[in-house]
Structure formats: structure tokens, C-alpha cells
Image (cartoon, rainbow over all chains, first blue to last red; front, top):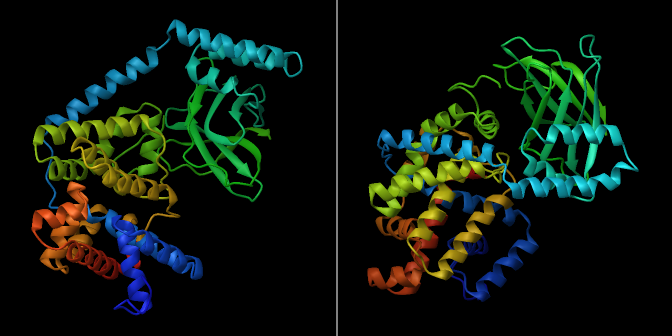
Length: 253
Length: 187
């Protein structure tokens, strides 16, 4: 279709094409026409997003129907059941995978930090071996050391394990951290070279001052922006996470 | 674990949920359970199926880690997921599924969430409900058949006994109108 055939001025015509795109009913000719419009005027890319967003909110116009009260109970019961199963999943297969991961890493032990990694693997026996093994099996896995830098955390030390390019999953093992007041919480942060700080997650320690935890940060460093430092803060658990809290551990990347 | 409350943000609740805090799931359900159930019921038309799908959506959300709060609001994400799974249950035509997958993918592509998504759920309801009343009855009917039943425009034309060209034009004009009414709230 070309403009001479179109009953609309260009902008209206382009809007109709954008709507057709979102509704999934463009002919191949119309699709080519829309692509050309978007290529010529990149603002139309934003218009496509806006059109898409307009369609996605259609269900917000429905009259709300309240679900039956028992549905929440069903969901919470199922969640508790699945959570328990997930935590108890220490099958022989998992164990074999972990051992395989350890074996793969064992060769690296000779050329990297033997003691630190062995300690990491000791922790790995306690929690979620599947995930640790999975990260360890990545050939480019990296360990970052963290040490205490506050007066009461000089003995604290630990490691963060991750795969470069995959910040969506990191495993952290720390020890000798002082116990916190009930209303306090430890939080971990990642500093980027552009000055941004990414929140990784929060944790508390066991009675021995140790923690072994897997974080799945919601944010990742933007492509091409390197990370410079990890640090741990202490803050009030009721407060929203802020990197300005008291720093108790840090590690250079 | 941080104390969470009804005032916690979605992001804080998601963090807490992923750490195994069941109370976070309860608060998220209190916030969005009605929305998910309403969409599920509108599409599946049976309360037992809508309950089953609502449970599936919330339990899968707990396990799935693909949601990016910087790109879309949780309400939008849950609506799109509910629609997707409901249409799968309705065994829609393959071509329509492809269109649907494209819609799901669009959530990943979108640069940021919109001002409308950032508004409270009640404000969103009010705005969209008002906007939809400005469409013609036919525009609304066809858009809703597309959205909730996931059927092709050819099938809509057959069911309404109107020419395909009319259905396409009506649907597009309806969406363009909706977009114009929502204005900067969806940019």
C-alpha cells in the first residue's frame, strides 16, 4: 500500500499501521511500510511502544471480581509445599552434579586460591548445591573476596561467586560477622564504574555469624559498564534499601 | 529478613518473596489477586478454571525470575501472563499464539514502564474504564474479542457476520482512539 491509496494523512496512516502491528493483523506490504516509517522517523518506535501499552492495559477496564476467600489459602498452602520440596531437594543426582562441579574447580584450585575455594565448597554442602554447582561449572566463574572494614568486623571475611555477564544469580558466603539487633539487616551492593550502585539483596547471619545465600538481583549492570566494588551495609530492616548505610565489608572487583 | 508490610513496594516484596518469605506472597496476592482472577474469569468463564489459573500465575511468579520491574509494572506483567496462559488453555489458533508471543516479548523490549502503570491500581482502573467508554460499542467489542478470546480478525468477522476489512479497520481505529485518549500516560 502506498500513500496515494491511503485515505489518511501520513501520521494517521502510520497510527493505523502501528495499531495493526499491535493487533497482529498487518499484511506483509503493510509491515514493510511500517518498517520504513520507523526507519525514517525513530519517534515512531516510541509510538509503537505507546500503542502496545494502550492495548496491554485493556483488562484494567474490567469490573473487578473478587476471588473466593479460600483461593488465597490454597495458594499459600501450595507455596509452602513447593518451598519445602525445593529446600529438601538433595537428591543423589544433585550431589553428583555438585561433585562434578567441585572436580572441575579442583583443577583450578592449583592455580587459584586453594584455601578460599575449599571453604566455599564447605559452605556449599549446607545450602542449595544445585545452584552452586551450576555456577561453579561455568568455566569463567569468578570469586570476589570481601573483608570487614568496620571496627567490629575486622575478622569478617567471605566470598561472592558469580559468572561474568550473568549478574542475575550470585552466591555469597560470609563468616565472622557480628550478630545484629533484631530490627537490623545486612544488605549487599554492587558499585559500577559509572557511579551507579545496584542493590543485590539482604541477609542475616546464623548464630555463628555466617551466612551462605543465593541472590537473584533484580537489576544487572548495563551492557558495557563494568563493576568496581562490592560492599555490605547495615541498616534498619524496616527501611527501604539505601546504599548510604554503615559499611561493614567491601571487596574490589 | 527485612520486615515487610502492606506499604512495601512491589520490588521489595519480590525480593522478599524470592528469599522465601510467604508473607510477601500474601501481600502481592492482596494487591493483584483480584486483577488476575478478574482477567482469568473473563477469559475462561468458569470460576473453578479461573481459580486454578490464578493459583498457577502466582506460584509461577514466585519461581520465575524473568520479571524486570524497570520495564513494566507488575500489574501489566501479571495481566499479560494471565492472558497468555488463559489463551493457551483456550487452545487458540497458532497464528494468534504467535501474535501473543510477540506481545509477551514486547514486555522485554519496552524501555520503561509507563506513567499509567506507575499510578495506583484504582487510578489505572478509572482511567482505562473511562477511556474505553469513549470507543464505539463495535470498537470495544472487537478489541475485547481480540484480547480476551485471542481469535483472529477473520474469525471475528465470521462470528459477527461482517466483512474482514471492516473488522480490521474497526479494531485499528478503536486502538488508535484508545491510544489518543490515554495520551502521555502510556508514553
